[in-house]
Structure formats: structure tokens, C-alpha cells
Length: 116
Image 1 (cartoon, rainbow, N blue to C red):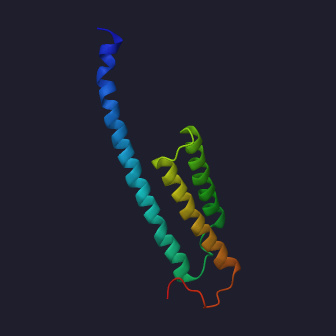
Image 2: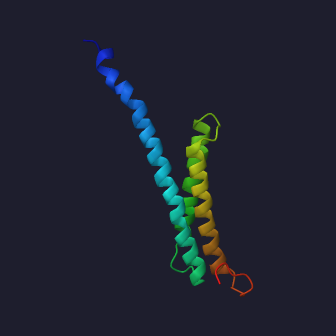
Image 3: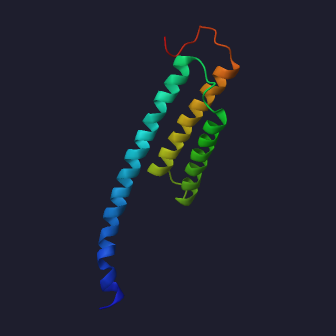
């Protein structure tokens, strides 16, 4: 028996593992993108952002953005699913960070409400 014979089942299982991991990545990152919405809505519904850390959300924005850029570079400057998901995560984290900053430093006037 040689090494090629021993590795044959692993070579067949790899595409299935990659397909499963790809599906799991898409599922959990889609859920994560949706999970940002309650935070965004809660910030605007309360009109206060004191309980939310601007530093944390800026860090999340930077982490997701740099991961998207890194994946883009590593993937031959192509936009694939992983790049798009990380870029959209960065967008959502950035929206939360902007909302926090807006509510902290711009006094509400009542003329522009997201939630009645």
C-alpha cells in the first residue's frame, strides 16, 4: 500500500468539507448581518447611544474592512463571497458607529427621525 492509496479517501472528502464550510460561512455570516439590525434599531429607537461603545464598533468596522481587503488581495484582486460578506459586515458596523457618533454629538431636532 502506498501513500496515494491512503490519501485517496481524504481527497474525495475535501470537496464535501469545502462545500459544507462554504455553506456554513454563508449561513452564519448572513445571520450576523441580520443580527446588526436590532442594534441599529435600538440605538435609534432610544435616541441615546451612551450604552454603546463607539471604539468597539469602529474596531469591528476596521477588522471587517481590512479582512475584506486582505481576502481581495489574497484572491488575486477578485471579489468573491468572502470579500463581499466582510465588506458588508464592515458597512453594517460602520453604520452603527456613525449612528452612535451622530446621536452623541448631534442634538436631536425632531425633524429627522428614523423611527416614529
